[in-house]
Length: 370
Image 1 (spheres, rainbow, N blue to C red):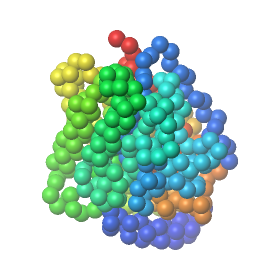
Image 2 (cartoon, rainbow, N blue to C red):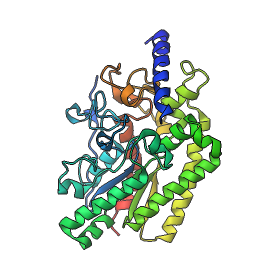
Image 3 (cartoon, rainbow, N blue to C red):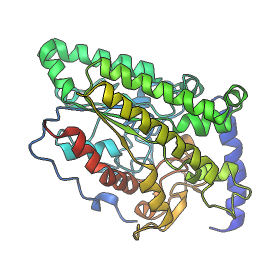
Image 4 (tube, rainbow, N blue to C red):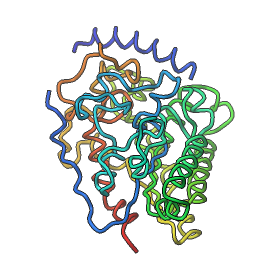
């Protein structure tokens, strides 16, 4: 791909992206399925957050932020574009398979889900959302408080089938996964001007932390006992952040430390708060899923990561395309498993699998029987 193609395509895509943000090879089937744990009591995997864990809820929402068309799902079984913002499975899918409840976590809003599918877990997540209430408004997607309301509705549906006491025990043994916050910083704070006018970076970190803790408290109040909270990634390494904020988006494609450091600081703040929650609720197991470290290692090529491309996505130029800009007419790389990123924001299935592998000890801690 030559520089002219990059430059011309980049300009067009940049204009398209800005207009949106104003309002707002080899099959990867070679990846092994995680081994199923024995002797654990996980009843369900219940997921809250953004596009990193949305398995298709936005298919049922009036928003342009969808991933239910090719080439999304290119390496999913039968090449189905489920609404996952990747070429294949997401980390919660691998976790659900690992703990033995199901191979794929479906979206809660799918009207065709059986009670059996509901009982073993669903995702309430919505691509484009965030902890900041303004973030989902930009994208017209499902906010975090609404996801909690859907969870309450979910509990009532279970109660009507298996009874209240059994539902309480079911929820107590479920694994809760939370993954959000990147959109708050990348889209809402860094790209659009509204929040920057009223928040310093440190104040915004505190604001998002407060909203994160509010979700955790809501879930604990509803019976959650095992909670996995994803930390922020190295945001300065996201291809779209490099494109929008690098001095030369074509020639200088290295990670931007300033943006990554904000995520790293936030993760430490979050860890400190989770320690306090554990002290306050001794019967609640809660831990961070570290995406920052594994992604940094993959991008830095540590331990022979096996990736050939770390600073652009597989879809299109890989510099700006995501959502509708990554579509059936987009150029695709021949082997997504050689790319850290599928589009300009979202990881490939291989990357999600590697994050899962790094998270396995934490999952083991959360779900082991007393």
